[in-house]
Length: 165
Image (cartoon, rainbow, N blue to C red; front, side, top):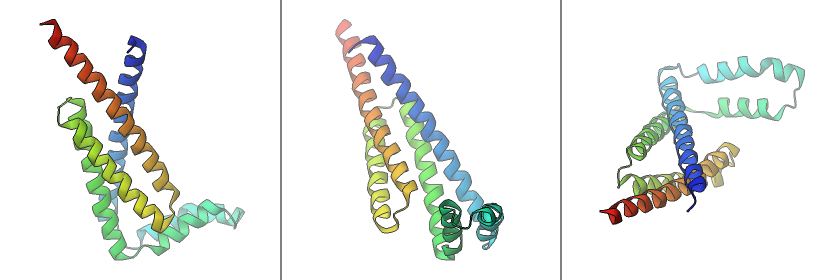
């Protein structure tokens, strides 16, 4: 493998970990935000954020989708979102930290975890058709690919070091 390709894989790996860490942080913050908000706060916030847009363009698909989502959440769904966001965010942090430490178990653990996310998000998408799930799934598949390439690169470097001694 060329030095340039190895460098590109390493930096893509690091950037994808940064992205996963930021996503994990956003999920934890979102889960905590949902946990402390009053039950009707989501609908009121969505109303406030979309009111002017819907006044200008009552057919705005994004604003209408936000309103539909905000008014469709029931307490059971809200509890699910809290648990999902907190759990998903914490798992992202664990995976990112393990990969940064280059733990041997981190690579298969992260691939398995991300594949579970892909499976769940695909299943959820089949029921909700939420385009955000497709975006998250595509990001997870990209990160799986980068993790596998980084693991091969790390194994190759370790094998080269051990052959020197």
